[in-house]
Image 1: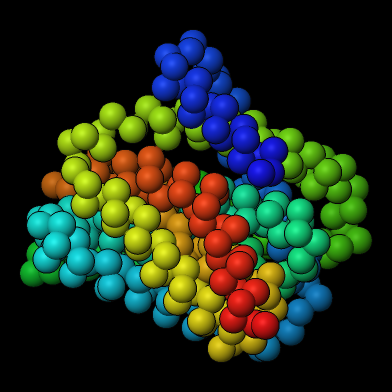
Image 2 (image 1 turned 30 degrees about the vertical axis):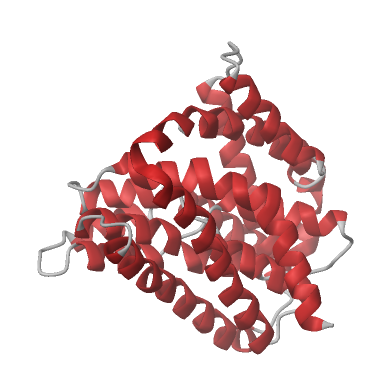
Length: 308
């Protein structure tokens, strides 16, 4: 098991054993800013080497995947989970969007496996942030009104999107040579910062475990089953659009992840009647640990089997 995942487990166990371990809020904020900028910068620098027209069809296909996932999740949440329209739409929107930290763990996993991937994957990460949230809102508010200007402002100008897009643009404009002086800080320290962030995520995820008693077994099954279905679609799409095995693993990881930063903020504005505890518990206490401990290695193995 990779050291980064072990840090997550340490944090979770510490919280479950009621340790007084805490990561100061300003440090947590700084770590998240660092990770988002580092991912964006590296992707932008590599994107400068690519032909945008060659990437466009793949980008459009990935956007379609982001819109499809909540459409698949919603009827399951309504018919089997018996959730209200607002709660089902909100949860579906969380699963249509993505987790940047899960992506970072996926990149780290590929590094450990010495498996290369497409340099423009951070662009696909940014593109997957938005469509799932919008579709989730539409499902939750069908027949009702939505303050679209306020919602789109929250989604498109939220911290994660601004930092990722900002990093992409800076890296793209500066190019590989221009960001060379930033390499020691943003790239060589990346894994160490990721370990600290995952320590905090372990603490936060474990604090939501108690909420599972209120949501029942269905949410646990959904929080594991939906990532498998979505990741399977990601593997199929990655193969169809010609991504490398590494890129396909990352697309599966993105498709199988669930947002716990951008989506909650957007749903708070667009679907205030939805219970945020349900969505956050599913995304953070179930799907996130499943993906980083079991999911990513499984998506790697499935991709290898499909490509063999």
